[in-house]
Image (cartoon, rainbow, N blue to C red; front, side):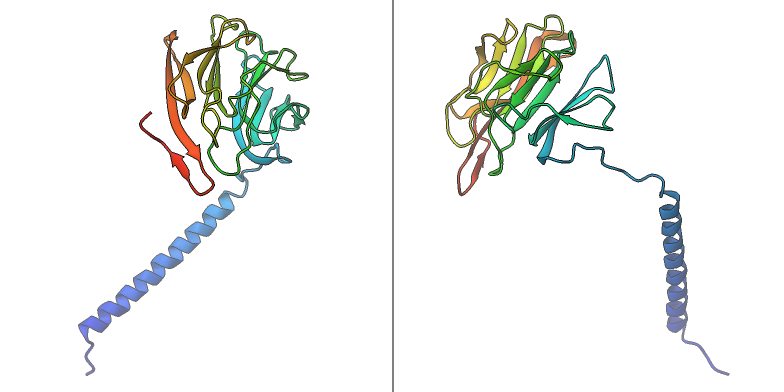
Length: 235
């Protein structure tokens, strides 16, 4: 009578179960693929531009109306929830955009901060803050042209003449307009509300949700060199 080695039997059983498990996993994966055929993501644009999407603003009074700020491709607008897009910033002074915001009181007023707020060698710089009073049909440069990179614009929900701008400042040099700027006349004039130093700007700012008189600002000290990025510092 032929005897079987226990070790050989166990190896055979292990191989059998692994084969069954592998088949079950493959079968299950195929079932998942078939079931998810109708759940594919699709791009809705804007697609004919360069670079990255930096910001999105949705009209709170008309959710099908959006503005999209593109890091290296201007500002785009849709009035049908992304089915079609129109460029609305092609004739202004900068193609590099950091942020876009819709006035909470009057959605026909749109603010754009130029200069994408990143620190790569590829990044373009801006020429300040722009304002539209006719839903993006035309724009006016409202100053801060030496900010070069703007990370955020806040509008006081109680008074749309009070505007805050987080300005990161130049990437390749010190100085410029960097810090937190404030306007109390709708952008006609600006005061420097928070200054840190010539190498450190403000990259973001937000209201306290319970009290718009309280603001939180994030500072970022950085400098791009040809050979390196000096990212972060004591300030």
